[in-house]
Amino acid sequence: MQTKSYTRVHTLTVTAMLGAVATVLMFLDFSVPFMPSFVKLDVSELPALLAAFALGPVPGVTVCFIKNLFAMIFHGSTGGVGELCNFFLGAALVVPAGLIYRKNRNRKGAVLGAAVGAICMAVLSVPINFFITYPMYVNLYGMPLDAILGMYKAIWPGAGGLLSCLLVFNMPFTLLKGVLDAVLAFLIYKPLSPILHGKKQG
Image 1 (cartoon, rainbow, N blue to C red):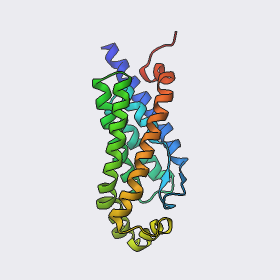
Image 2: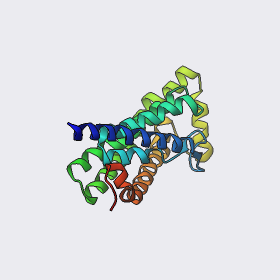
Image 3: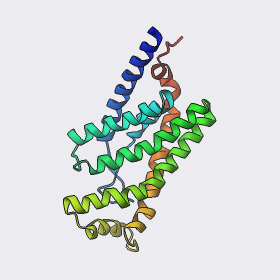
C-alpha cells in the first residue's frame, strides 16, 4: 500500500512539474518565416512527451491540458480556440507515443512511438483545423476567412483554399514540430530518467 501511495504521489508530482515546464515553454513561442504570423512554433509538447514515456499516456495528456489551461488564462489567449487545437494535437502526439513505448520499453519502442505520434499529430492537424479551429475563428470571432487565406498567400501566392493551405503549410509544420519535440526528448530523457521515474542516482 505504501508503494502504491508513493507511486501515485510521484506521478502527480512529476506530472505537475512537467506541466509547469510545458507552460513556460508554451509562453516562449515564436513566429517562423515559412508560416503565417499567427502560427507559432514552440516545444511545449516536449514535457508531455517525457511524461508519456516515463509515466504513461494519461499523464502525458494531463501535461497538455495543464499547459493549455494556463496559456488560456495568462498567455494572450485566443479565447480558447488555439488552446483547444493545441491540446488535441498534443494528445495526438503523446497518446500513441506513450502506448507504443509502454508495450516496447526500449529505444526502438521510443523511436517508433515518437514517429507514430508525430505523424498522427501532423495528419490530424488538417481535420482539426479545417473542421474546428478555423470555423471557430470565423464564426465565433468574425475573423474573415479571406484574411486568413491572405496570410498564407502572402508566403506562397499559389496557395488555394483552406484545405490546400492546411495540407501545404500546417501539416508539414506540425510534423516538424513533433519531430523536434521527439529529438529533444531523446537527448534529455536519459539524464532526467532518475527524476522522472523516482529513482536515486548512484
